[in-house]
Image (cartoon, rainbow, N blue to C red):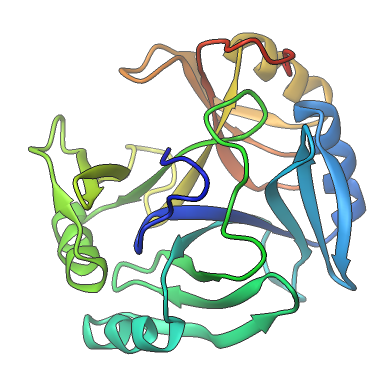
Length: 253
């Protein structure tokens, strides 16, 4: 992940969980990642780790399924929204103010994957990354990764490394931003952004997740970037656990 304070346009910078029972989600993620929570609005709470913001939890609208949404940094949500439409996407929610935090919008790409747009205010995005209990990576998966790569190149100017096994590393200003690749066979065949959270030990984190009522969908298994497991929380929102090297912080799993 790019480091906090260096979120260039198009870089995943923030993640938000929408769920029907935020209090239940706080109990689950607090136990899984040692998160603490600070209310910031009637329907939103910011999760923190070591005092740094790592994610937000919002109450879902009626009939809205629990899900993690990846937000991409942008200096002007209105202008980026225009680019989204011109490239074949649509707006699920027009740009709106998040009091004392920033300005946001919700978009859907031509493949059907929802993502957010974020212009920094007092919060430029995640204040802690690549540490246990924090955001580690974001990937876009779909049945048509070439079309996805074309869309995000047009909207955000992504450049790509040569694909490996169908997955291409996307770069912004030459720096790694995210990856775009094919959907995993048999799991989540539709298009989506998938959030990865870091842990010191994926197997232990997966065991803890099960004990908290979550579900392990696949793994833990080796991957080029760390041992991973695709999981669901106790309400059904999917994400990935990925092992990162310990840097001296307290273990979260």
